[in-house]
Length: 140
Image (cartoon, rainbow, N blue to C red; front, side, top):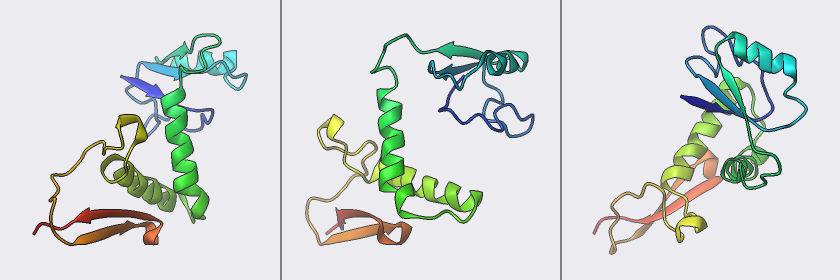
């Protein structure tokens, strides 16, 4: 199992709910935030840090694009009132992203499409107070 993470390494190796719990590798870039002492800490917990290749701008392109989408389509529009609120907002966005949002990279299709009707009235489903809206046809 592999964990992929940005530069925030708090609670990484917590024995109960650390993000690296049960993982064997952590993919990190060559940012100076990932110091040798941090890498040794990971190794002491049995997690091997794996560095991205040098000068590989497309190595993290998909992950970075997803993080940018989460920031600009979800998090920039709310003020999280705590960790649970933030987690709820991100989970709602993930449902929207995976099942209700068209993706240009796959010819404007949905990642996990439901079987939709070609006829019927157009309805909408709203998430996060209407910030995320999904339009679909009701079955006739």
